[in-house]
Image (cartoon, rainbow over all chains, first blue to last red):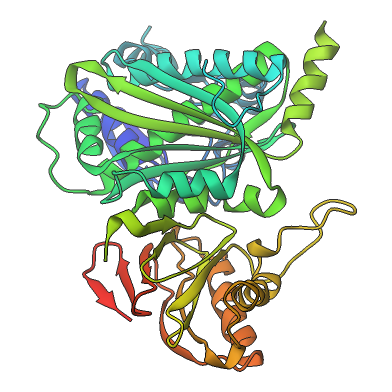
Length: 122
Length: 206
Length: 161
């Protein structure tokens, strides 16, 4: 059965790009969230195997959303995908519990490699 | 870099950070749209925002543009604007999605979010230069996108800064995507006091 | 209405002139107030940012043109000084105050509209035309030959006020 993935990003075009990459490579995108609040709600509703999480979003940023998701499920797999290319941000994301940190604009191979590693497939 | 007719130019530290930022932004833009782009003109100048906005109001491209405005918060806050004429935005969307140019015909959520995300990525690129090279802490907030007259979008872009200061430093860059003859524009508008912060950080490093 | 006679008004600015000049501007949350003297075919436009002047730095006086409460009286004062027109001869039209960025908590456009109405009421200048509010930008051309304002809201037809 395909791994189930939730995509959280406030830009529909990014969600579309990630969905295309993931579904073309055998993953099931089971839901999308447009901000941190939606991300947390969808996580509770869908219990995905993995979440991709943007940081800069309205209502609630990705770091706060990630903290809430990990409080619900400390084994949640979360890959941060963000335009913020700063060491401090990367360190914070890893400290909170991100499995990986991808900087936009992303390459297809980088996304797939991160997802496979998160599932222990690489 | 052209220091234009207004006569006042930014100090050396600010000039350097502007140049590094534009180099970074150019790389990120080319990577995102997956086509090489050239910065063909850039200016950094101190000006009266009333005059700058009147000049923008005179530009030919007043029919419709889509603009992405990003507020950057932190030690050296600034505002960032990226905009392009509406037909260019359709082509940029196709390039980003690696679709045949001409596929996008409606100004739908993907076209708007393409411009939103270009603004997000480029503004974040400027922030990374501040952070990595100058140890200045800043972060972007979510972009605000508008599909409207250029003069209207520019007014929204400058109004908070204009309310605080009469004379401001403004950085203007133009992108040229040669293969498709696309033109896009970018403005960076430091908040009053940001120049001083940059200068102080620079002096601390020497 | 000739493009050669067009003068563009930027943010936080006042322009005054007479026939055959056309004063033009673009608006979002800012408001433009146009004052016109039909007998003298002269008038002016203020494009202001905020309703009330505020101290921006210690001891620094903000430019009057940026605010409704200092700028509208300043527009009137300049028209009187340059063209020797009395207040009673003017009519007003107002435009803009839109929430273009669609930010739910941002009321600056509405506050700018309210400020213009209150100040013009206080000055006893009649508002004979207006198009304000909404979520789209405004392009206005104020023709000093006739006092007409041609207003186009983004994606709509031009209307005459």
